[in-house]
Length: 400
Image (cartoon, rainbow, N blue to C red; front, side, top):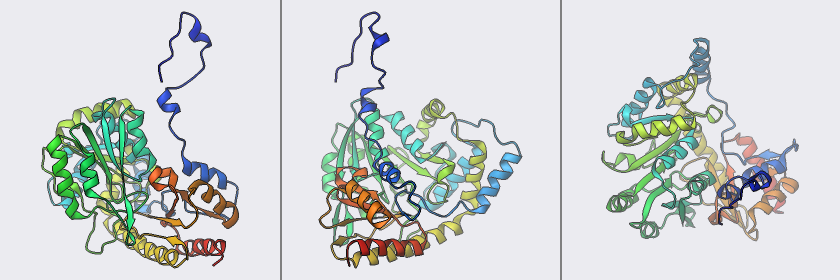
């Protein structure tokens, strides 16, 4: 669309409009469904991507003590030195290779980390390849920046989600600026197999492509042999063009705290700091101090959370899989089960029907892109009794 031009005086009477790119952005279909359910007290809600458990007391207490100690002022753009150092140690242990504080930038949430990374790297017109379906924010951020998005869809096969690696490699061309991978995935729970990483990284190296990782769910993986999902950070060299975005929201039950971080080459530290300054200046100091305690004292909590989510995944996958006409691939990680009901291809319409007719609130697959249409996302980071009751509601609605 061509930009409107005005003669002298005409702008005064022009429509009050935002950028055409912004006006074209789709509104959140998850919010659309949630709005449909407001005011229904007997509704079982599994649409939002957060646990029903509160933040652990030791993290809350750290924030309270920090506030009482007047830790309420600005910090360094890149974050508190203690938190960056602690995260560097944490990542070095997790991925068995060294990280330094200079590789870490603290952000005000995981989505802010993704925004900052893309604002730092992308130019208008750049080509961005994204593995989908995916949380809508990830795919819309580059569009807001006037980049071109190419989608490579996962497929459900044999009860699990799979990536056609060759299809992804074919999409990574010399014209590609960035590849974005979310593993474990929101909404599917797909987790990249360890053996697939090197061939993808080699293609990115060949063409000088940036690899942006959404690692928010990396600790929520259900293979009992793993404490973290297979990570590109573990096989990367110092000079690789890799940025990883992460968050305290899911693993440490801190969704409302809005605290995240970026892992990036040290050469980007100054530029990332500039973009943080122009977005939020810095993350709140007392929230960073709570995050420091989460990292340093939270490992037992993380293990218990992961086991609890695995048990709930197993229960929900088993019960949904027993329903006629329901396809429910088991997620390898994360906190969601992405499933479909035979004969229902409009996920928004189906979600609205389930609210009114089954008192069941689920996220429509269309919220995660065209590859998700016909599917539903069920967040199983919820009370076990509520999960059982939700399946009973669905079973009754299906007439089984």
